[in-house]
Length: 136
Image (cartoon, rainbow, N blue to C red; front, side, top):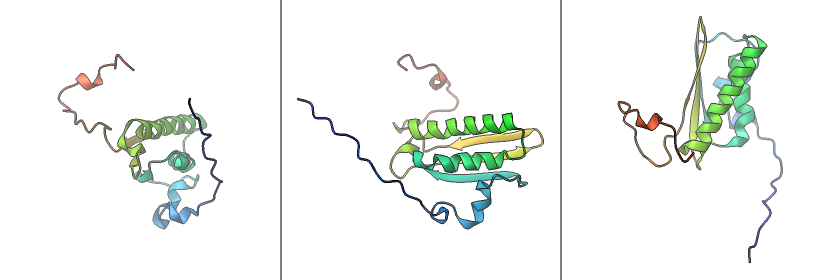
């Protein structure tokens, strides 16, 4: 006999931004064009902060055209989701960092996650880990 329990429904809450974002970095989340060379922010490894991820990405690309902003947000969100799903960033206490570098040719977005879940370290000189996964 299988017993299935319904997921616990938690109430919706509002958290003051001050608890999540230091005052020195609040301008990272305002969708107004602000000149910058580099921005980086450490996000807690939890999907509930994805609205904050979107706000960060939109503010970084605020001075770009609408299509660029849309794609930048889409790709950045995908990087964040992959960090949560495929690295230790998604485990309790995990974090990941989104970093945006501005140059005359555009924006470069990088994500530093918590690393491989299986604690296997890859040798960057060997490329076998880049081969397609036959099981996935």
